[in-house]
Length: 164
Image (cartoon, rainbow, N blue to C red):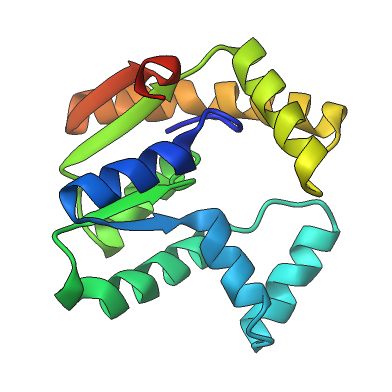
């Protein structure tokens, strides 16, 4: 559970390397699927072009496929960008299993905004208004998700500036 621009992908890459895990990024899996030209990729492209979030069930399918592919070559998985809301967490547990540990990279809205704007200068990511909406949406979804994982499993809550 981490907001946009919190540094989750960077942290996952470092942790995966250090502990021999496979890092699965929901965003990367979606990009890979889009380049595959499959029927599912056409559906994802249509959704994204409308500015809508890709349904969690599709992301879960991509995660499950990637996990099955890497199962024999890994000590475990670090997943970033999923789940984004409580419903997705419950679906993940019913279809894949309960996570052993959940990281919440606690990052201020100001930090997420400035990091996202900086990233926007070097890539074709979102504009300032879209970034603001993404951060607001994250905070709305994060509270119940964080509370859920505090009850269900070990939750590690950390400030990202301490890890970078």
